[in-house]
Amino acid sequence: MRDSVDHIHFLDQRLMVQGDPSLSKAQTMGLWVPSERIAVHYIDIPNAPERKWAELVPWILEDRILQPVDEMHFVIVGRCGNNQLQVLAISQQDMFDWQRVALNAGVAATVMAPDFLALPWEAGRINVCWREGVCLVRHSAEGGFAAKPAVAWAMIDKLTAAAEAPPRLSISIPDSDLIPAHLKIGADINTASIDWQFGDIGLSVNLLTGPFKPQIAGRSLKGWLPAMALMVLSLALLVAYLQITNNHYSHQIEAMGRQAQTSYSRLFTGRKPQPMEVRGSAERQLGRLFIQQQSLRSTPVAALIALDSLMVDCECNLIALTADEAGMRLRISSAKKLMSKSLSIPGYQLSIEADKTEGAIVLTLLASPGLGGGK
Image 1: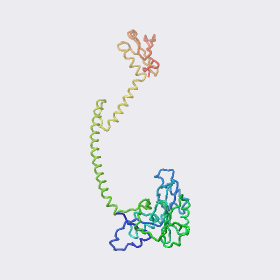
Image 2: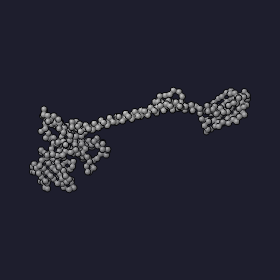
Image 3: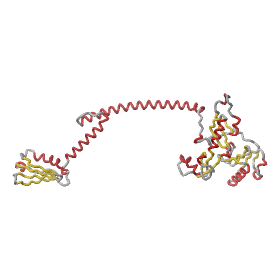
Image 4: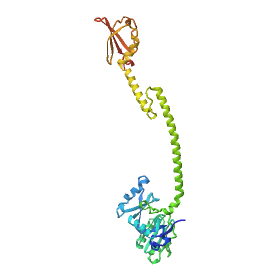
C-alpha cells in the first residue's frame, strides 16, 4: 500500500495533539511543496563521469542563482532530449522549514516534489491550474513552474512561441477574466481544482536527497527484517566456511613445513631449523656455499687446484711460492722427476726457469687469456 499524499500547505490540519494515540507515531507521506520556491535549470551535460556531476553542478550554476551555492540544495532530475540535464535548485532553508512543518504535523515525509507535477500532462498540451493566487503550469513530463498570473501568462506565451507546433491549453481557474484574451482562443477552460491527495507523486522527482534523505526507521525496519536475517545467516555460513578452509590450509602448511625440514636435513648439516625458519636457513647456507665457490674460482686457489695433478708424487721440495691475480710462481728443488713429466695444464701457460744459486727451478703458472682457469 502506497503512502498517502498531500500538499504541505494543508498539513496544519494534521497538527499533532498531545495524548492522542492515533498520532503517537509519525505517518509516512509524500508531500507536494510550492513550486515557486524551486528554480528549474537546464545545463549542458558535464564532460565528466556521472558520479562527479553532483559535485560539479553547484559550480556550473553559481552565476545563475542569487544565493551562495553552499546555501542551496541541488537535485539532478535527469537528461533532457536536447542533451542537457534538468536540475532543481532549492534553498536549504526552505528544505529545513518544510521538514520541520512535516515533523510538527506528525508526518514523516518520504517524498517531496514540486506541486506543478500534480497536474496532468500529455504531449502537445500545457496544463494550468490555480493554487491560492498562484498559477501552476506543467508543460512537459518533468518541466513546469509556478508564478503569479501576469508572469505565468508571459512565460506561457514564450513557451508557445518556441514550440514547433502551437500547444493546446487546458486552464483550470476560478475566474476566467484573469486569462488574457489571446490565450482564451482555443483553450479548454474550467473551474476544477487540484485534488492533492489523489495525485500520484511518484519517485521520478524527489527533493529528499543527500543530507535531506528521509530516515524512516519504523516501517522500513519491518521490511528489512527478512533481509537482515538472510544477511546474518549468510555471514554465519561464510564464517564457518572460512574456518573450515583455514583449518584445511593449516594442516597443509604443517605438512609442507615438515617436508621442508626433511629436505633441508638431506642437503645441509647442523641443527634442523623450525618449519618457519627453513627458508631463511637455506638462503644463508646457499649464500655461504656461493662465497666458497667464488673463493675456489679465484686465481691463487684455482691455480693450486690445477697444480694438484702435476705435483702428485713429484718427490720435489717447495722452497717458496708467490701468487697474484696474474698467476703463480713456485721455487722448487729436487725437481728432476717433475721435469720428466709433461708440463701441461688446460687453461694455463707454464714456464720453467733454472735457479742456479740454489740448484732449483722456478715454475711459473699463468692463466690463459679468455679461459676460465684465470678467473
